[in-house]
Image: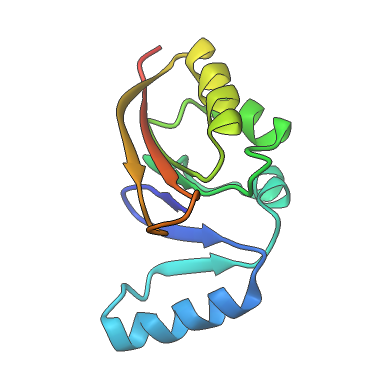
Length: 130
């Protein structure tokens, strides 16, 4: 998901999520300017030519961000990242690499979406500080 001062967008491989969100847009009053792209994020960032976003929301699979995405974020210096993770090891790897390129964690939340299980999510809020 990305956002800049004039547009918003979302990339997802899951076409059913895209349809649900498109339906939710009309029923929940979501902005019609929100764009959906059902493509791998690596393909999206190679071809996207729009303005750089102010904020990126990252929710990768358990394996974490791909090397391509980590490199892209380091090079583009997006102002704010919201990184939702279900795996502490890949979150540590990815945030460590992003920190080395100028990002810092400003907030870190642990989210118990699945009570009474061993599963937990974490949300790292990062800002580019140079």
